[in-house]
Amino acid sequence: MQLSRSNTRVWSQRSGGGLLAVFVMMFFIPAVALGEDAVVRGKIEYSKANRKSWDGLTLAVPFNQLKATLKEQVEWPLPDFPAKFDEWDIADKLAWSEKFVASKEGKKYLEQRAALLKQARVFDIKFDSEGRFVVYDVPVGTYSLAARLDHQIDKTAYVFELFAQIEILEDVDEVSLPPLQVEITPLLKTGDVAPPFELSSISGAEKIKFDGFDGKFLLLNFWTTARVDVTSDQQRVQEMYTALKEKHDLRLLSINVDDQPKSAIELIKTNQLAGPHGMTQGLEHPVLFNYGVRSVPSLWLLTGNGKIAMTPNEIAARQQEGVDLKSIISDRISGKDRSVTPGNPADKNP
Image (cartoon, rainbow, N blue to C red):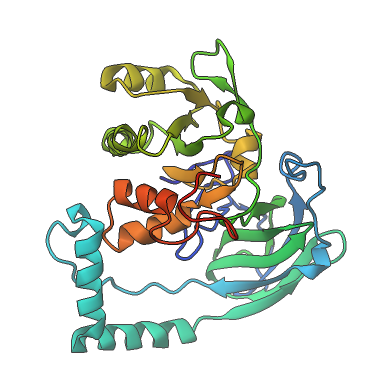
């Protein structure tokens, strides 16, 4: 489920890392048309809300270290998917995709797509120290502006990135963009210290704190009622938790990210979902930034001594292999797939 932080940003999950995409409503300034090509001008900036980490570090890199490209978007027809393909489970979709890619038809399709992509126009962009940029002679078309830099700050790796979609219309010779925000996301991995948190319970009656789960495995379950399959998603998590909570001394904290909690409270009561339940009341809460939550549902497994035991990407990768959620969590806690934390016995609750 993609999540929009504001009217100029949406959340997106890309393959390999669940990367954030920022689609911007562009403002075009028409002038006397001098030709079919346009000048694109803009400026990038950092979000005030997302410039400090949970331990007080200032998160920033000089703008001129970010290298970007403006690349033409090329459309190509999709392959002929089987009937009701969207309703298939992940394992069946992957099996069909692998078979299609290996087929003569699939290889031809990929070759044609590669040829089209190769023809796309690409412009290199460099930002000055203030974040300003200009691109000349951009033909009519739709373009993506993308930049990414992985950077280590203290002991944590962060990704600094930007993505905007721009359309160059006919009879427009200059496009002035509103400020584009550089998104910053921590790249947490197994064994890293889990960022502490404090948030309100969904009823608003009490505070839920990170240290309240000391000594126990904790599954963080970020979710939203805006997702179509929210009920089945949450029931799947509940079934896993019920089966494992006593065996592995596991605790569950579900965190709703809706702006208002009314729908979430109704769903919790109707389906008798076990708590505790926290809420962020929107997408600007520090817990979302510190854990790099860009899409929901998002599941994080933490150890009893406050470290990351399993990331959403690891869980998703196991699910794509056809492993059910109960086995994924149980295997990680018991050490059947790998050690929970580097250097610790795999079968010991840290």
